[in-house]
Length: 92
Image (cartoon, rainbow, N blue to C red; front, side, top):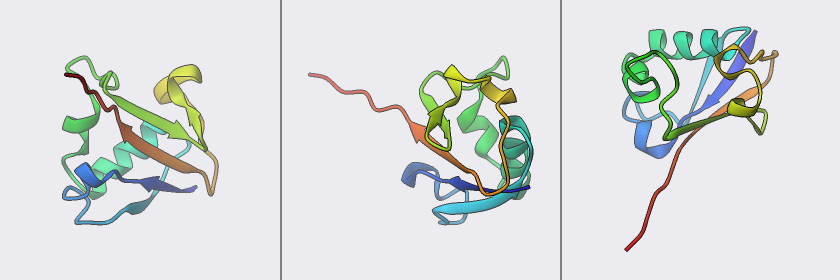
């Protein structure tokens, strides 16, 4: 199943400057594995030492936050869009 992954500006050097990447997968985990296989370096930016998503990276499948779905096991369908959104922090 072809899925479009939207790459945030801060991670585009990993994808060769591409803002979107097409990969195959039936779950979010498979999609992210395929993304890293095509453009090595994403795993270090997306996962913590335990193999879970970093708490400062938000991932959406078709506009739904995967933290409120099935996490890495969230199913994806042909034509879905996966968006990687780094958390933004600020303050004084």
